[in-house]
Image 1: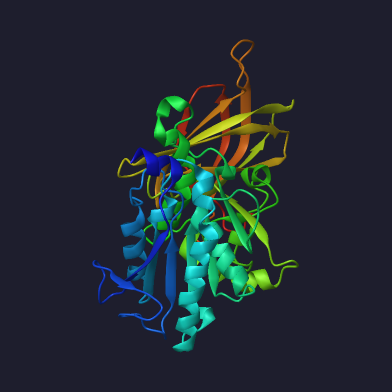
Image 2: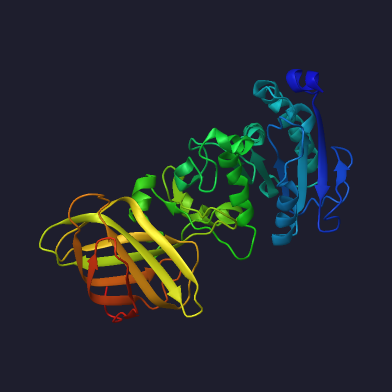
Length: 389
C-alpha cells in the first residue's frame, strides 16, 4: 500500500533453510526448530538488502542453487523483506540491528547444538552486508567468513574492485536507462559473485595499490609461475587467506576488469612491443585475435597512451572476452588519437603475445612490422624462441 511504501513495513524475520535434501523447497526454521540443518556442515546465511518494491531478489534462487552445487552445506535465507520494504532507505536501515539480533540468537542456539563458528559464513548484499557486519562484531570477528557485496571503501581482508569499482560495463550511463540506471552497477557485485559458482568462469583479480597501476600491467606478478597465486573473486576468494596472513596488516585491494555480459570473464594477455622509430611515439594499440574456427576477439588498449621509444620494450596488458587456445592470425592497429595532423608510422622490431591465464602456452611472435596509423595490419604469428624473455 502507499502507506506501507512511505512509513515502511513492520519487521518480520524468517529463516528459510535449503539443503541438498530440500534443494527447491525451503524449510522455515527458528532457534527451536532446526529442520534438516546439519550442525557438522558449513552453514551459509544469505542476507538481502533494501527492497523498495517488496519483491524478492531476482538473483536469490540462482545463488542458493549455485552454493548447493559447489558444496554440500546448509543454505539459510534471512528473509527480512517485511522491514526492508519501503521507499525511504533510512526506514529500512533502522531495522538492520534488529535483524542482526535475530541472527545472533539463532547462531547461539546452533553453537549449543554443536555447530562451530568456523563453519558459519554470511553473504550480505547491500544493507544485508551491514547486518553481516553487525553479527560479526557480536562474535568479536570469530565468524568463519563474511562476504559483503556492495560497498566502496576497503573493509575486508581483501576488497575487490571490478572495473575500478565505479561504473560497470553494460550498465546504463544516464538516467534514461530508467530503474536499471540506479541499481545495475550496485547489483553487479551479486552477479559477479554468482559467476564464481559456475565451472566455466573463474575471475582472477590482481592485488594492487590502484586501478591505474593494474591497467598498466604493474600488478600481475601473482600470475607468474613460482609466485603466489592470484586471488579469485567470489566463493573461492578465501583460498587466498594463507597469503593474507603473510601481509601486515592482512588486508589488500584487488582490481580486475569484466566483460559487459554474463559470465563476465576477461582473459589477460601481455602484448610486448619493441620499436625502432628514431623519435618517440605516443599512442594506443588495438589487437585482434582469430583462431582457425573463425572466432575473433578484440582488445583496445587505450586507457592511456603508451610511450614507444627506440629499442625499449613496452608491455601492454590486453583484455579479451574470449580465450582462444590456438591463435591463427593477429591484427594490430596503431593510433595516436589525433583527428587532424600527419599520420604516423610505428616501426615494430618485435611483437610478442603471452597469456597470463595460461603461462604454459607457447608465446607468439612477429618481427619487422610497420604499422601505418589507423590501418589494420593482419599477420600470422610464429612461435617465439624458447630462450627469449
